[in-house]
Length: 405
Ligand code: TRP
Ligand code: SF4
Image 1: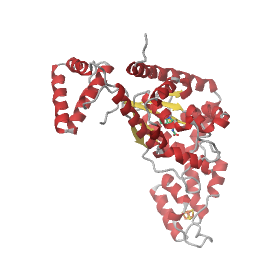
Image 2: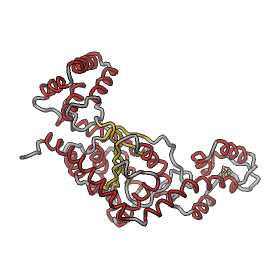
Image 3: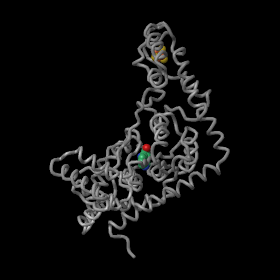
């Protein structure tokens, strides 16, 4: 059964504060956030607890990176007035939901998340055979479900975590969405929509349940979303009732992938701190220039007169991100005919990246001189996030039988 996220206007995403942000973060996730911030109700947060799962032995890195990361976000174009920016550990509801979800999550689901073994392999120097690290993706599920987010903008490597979130939500709804008098409550809720809409809902529901008409399902969902005067609980019931299930307490979110291609690093592998191939968002121009000049090129171009092949060159991969069509042609032609040298080829790349980073670096400098503004932005965000999180947690507790009076 597929349940849609009710609050499809709501978006949640987080980043781990484990060091400086680089162009990989910018092109992979941040640009997407910036694009979404005016279209959706966005909750973006610093995932400091997630950082602890891998950096528990050097947690000072986290402390140092938290505020710098928020500065980078804003410098890159996130507008604090348009979104809620907050700190994960300041919204303890994430932790309570994580605990509650842990009760119903089979161990095997966590053990088979591919990032679990991959990261342990990749970060061999760290002991990641901890309880916290195994629970990493479930904590992420709690981050998402506590806001009942419809979509989660993430890089490709995180899609499996969103998939797990969907499974956990489905299991939760399956176990706790079955109220004793569910059918009566659902029927009563239908009446509240008014005669015309109630009739339409019943018709569409029948079409879907009896003939598997998925178009009818979509239309019915849209109908429910447009109902202004239904209480949230009733809407959730009717979403579940539509598909023959119980109440949808935690809607299933969808991953929202960045359209951008993978951001290559200085060596042609994916840009990542652990490969030491990054350009930081605040890279000074001089070190940017040096880094690009030092980049390896097609190894067959030993002498300037040797023709090269851009497909064998990491510089070309960066041109694919930054160059105009004309420049790309110039590179292709000049490289293959040995008409240009590698340093010539790197010139426009350096210019393009420098132009992209200049305003970001300047804004970051300004922001750094007003740390109290950054703290206030985060405090406001913490409060806004907690309000939503407390609502969800209230419903979750009630559904699980934990709302003692
Ligand atoms: N795991 C994510 C990453 O490493 C960060 C993250 C934590 C996150 N919680 C989240 C992303 C919730 C999206 C939604 O990039
Ligand atoms: Fe790479 Fe450009 Fe040199 Fe060709 S000319 S090998 S694309 S740096």
